[in-house]
Amino acid sequence: MQIELKKVDTDQELQSMCQVAEQVWHLTYDQLLPEGQTEYMIEKFQSPQAVREQQAREGYEYYMVYGDGVPGGFIGFSPQYEGRDEMFLSKLYLLPALRSQGAAKRAFQLVEAEARWHGLPAIRLTVNKGNTHAVEVYRHYGFTIVDSVVTDIGGGYVMDDYIMVKRL
Image (tube, one colour):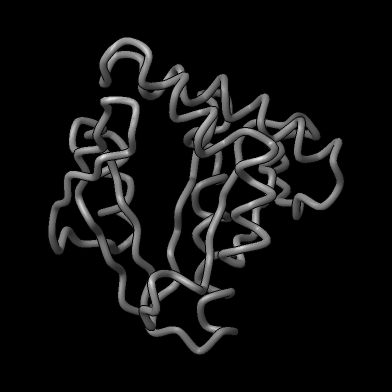
């Protein structure tokens, strides 16, 4: 499979990414989270308006991941995370068709290159404690669990996550 990563710039690309986000978040979170939380999180964190705000306020960059020209995932990261000297990998989501096809490897290579370009010595991410597959993937790519955090995201919902870091 031909894997391609392309920066999300246009409104059309943003809409496409948000459609993929809705699909993959339901596949990922519906079985892990209380009813309604997935939809709440999509609207709060992955709607076109939320993404544009993240780009403007927090310096987020988003990339679509394509497999043979078909949108199948996305990544989002920011070098401006809470004043830390670390790249924050906020989102790395792939639809099942792109898993085990080299897409995650390409995504990690991009994020690592961006972190190095910014002179950042580490990449930090959060991952749902119940998402054991993702935790194992991150471990495979050199991340270690350094802490855990429960974050109130409003609407009566929380995110119960591990914090993982990879030193570069």
